[in-house]
Length: 480
Ligand code: MSP
Image (cartoon, rainbow, N blue to C red; front, top):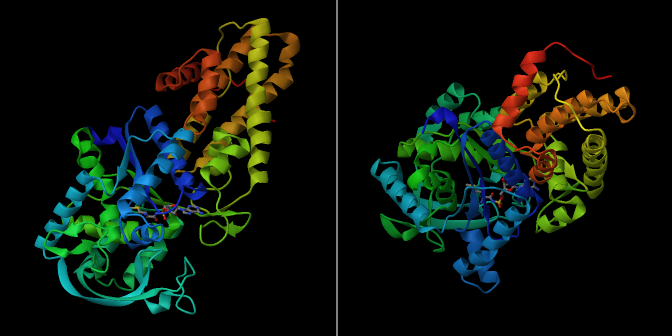
């Protein structure tokens, strides 16, 4: 597969100890938008999501509910799959870390890294947060030995453990960041990682003996693999199957800002050690609060996927999450804010435009004509913004174009003139809007396409571009 013409996007694999909520939906919708957008550009796309089934967190949650871990996670997986179906998420593969094919790849890689001399045996005593599945040093904790993320007291763990020589990769990582300035995105998150790496990297404990819910180490079956080593390799193991071979390396790992360290330090170091090519980009999005409170099961509020959809429908939820806040920033979710955008932007602007124009066309018909609307800039604008994952700005620019179309109807008083050529022009504009918005609100755009008799496709977009070329610069009207 030509590397230039493929796009491989991933979401984190979600822990199966909780039902999917707005935070999970956010990354998954964003990945779906990127996947659809790249398909529109004619690329071969591989979109991966899934679940993180192993580790102490899951084992503990299963024990609490009196179930075996596998049984426990099996019951949660359908909840994720259902949620993504409801949201029109078109993933290509749903991976679980309990998949045999994944376990096999992880075992092989562990052996390889071990054979390379990057894994050695030692003892570990440390402060462990089960919520994060990570050890902390005291200075990173809040008063009372509380985890800074979960605000829960960490546990003291002492165990025999295998260590990964992370310290060996300090310089190599720093060089890699330098050579690949886009690897840690957005830019504002990069320096923090670089500084922490510069402070020095300690070797990382990558095995556990205190529980057995994980992948056994091939060179010592008393140990199971540390859940993050196991989990991160999902991105790679998914491409080791038959026709997915050519998709590695990933073009974009979308994640939340809380797991940036794992993805930009551990992950590339593991890959370097295993001799595997590194991903192109890790993009960390911000966190949602709900009415200004933290979203979590243990503290604060949770908004489930069903509750989210019930407010104003699937497309409005998809639209809101990507429009309301820049992808790298934190945002506050509120029902009112979603309803406002649904009413003002989707119903009043887009909905009215489409129903007005289609109504007028039904009444007056239309006549093929040269198109004067200046659309070249908007297509280029949107493309540039999508490449930078600036979804909010891309939507803004599409909606500025919707405004332009609405104003055109208004200024020309089309309902009085019934000008067929103007109506043709408006229909063309709407087709373009529907193609550009399709990655974000697919259901709505497919309805528009059906009513206007066209297919959402790259050809459609190209046809629009051809039209523009003819009349470029010949502007009929400007936005007021
Ligand atoms: N299993 C790990 C990821 C392993 S990837 C190799 C994990 N799972 S998680 O289920 O806890 O979280 C998954 C993602 O959800 C994270 O990217 C996290 O940032 C995101 N979110 C959880 N709550 C969130 C919000 N309130 N807002 C936005 N995203 C949030 O971590």
